[in-house]
Length: 154
Image (cartoon, rainbow, N blue to C red; front, side, top):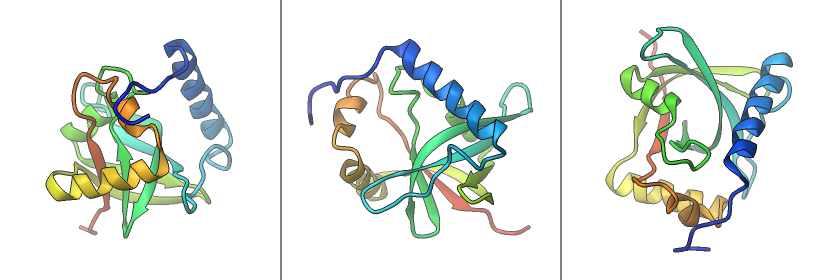
């Protein structure tokens, strides 16, 4: 559906789904609700940032794929208009922790992809989600492609 606006479930359904998903991951200690990417499919990880106003840890479930040692996600809020809080938090403090399926944790630094890198990573998302451009067209601004790089030891 390139160019047009892709069909989405109602907003209340999207937000309820992600709340339930987050609770499943939390209740299972990460044993359920997270999965690794497979050929042609994205994975799901839990990202924990530091709240930009509260200073408290804030966790969210994100779709991602691997690009070498980096993890790549989209700064979208269920394809709603607002920038997601996790992305605003990551911009304020780029240090975060990701949890992957199999209980592995990584310290990461987040940043937005720009230029040719963004074009390349966006194209890879297109291969994983045929409606990507249609979903992105629902947002009033460009959707950031977020790169989560392994944090170097201090």
